[in-house]
Length: 329
Image (cartoon, rainbow, N blue to C red):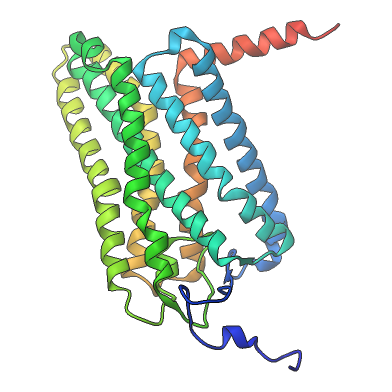
């Protein structure tokens, strides 16, 4: 075969369930900015470090401080743990793409990454809903807070988030595996998504499309609607308070959570719209929306909660002072 000839394994469709090793997929960085990939990797790496350190600090502070063992902080600890996992299953591969030009990703590795991305996103959505309910009970039914949101209820919510995320999105790799992938194995993002992979199929992918839409609607879509309902009820209760000072104090407890909800759902909705209704959107816009969807929430969540939550901020500063005092002079 001449050097310029295409690989024969890529020149024909491949049914993934057949014998042999499936051909790898090709990841895409930022179209039109390939020459800048090496330098763009540095701020991305900094974001990854912030996500790792910030979320780890949140988890450790909540774990070691008995006074923070309340439902609100347990939910925040769960969210930080999910963000740690989500950043770790995407960022190392993205950095190797930008720094080492490692565009190819093995077929089964891509399936595994796709499952983790979707299942962890489902878990994060469930936890954000639980945090919205926590704020609703704290503001609208404060006298019943300790009886409604007990520690055992919090544990059950964590189990439901885990089971829900796994159960709804576990079928996705199997649905992809039944498809015949065409010779064009180039993905539109820097990581593997179900919508992106199924669009490379030569045969009918209606089942994938319908199941993917149902799973997203019953998890992220339903959660988003319930969060909106929670905040409408909270807004009604806040407006019913007698003074502006009480209103500001009550609404101030929701600001950090609202920021996290917007950081998660706005890019998710935008990416879903592009995948299903605007496939002709500029490739750079698609790549940017995908990266914002996965990179921003794990970085933003610990920063927002660290800045807005006095209890966490005070304890982080206390640990920093203790570690500084222990250093030999």
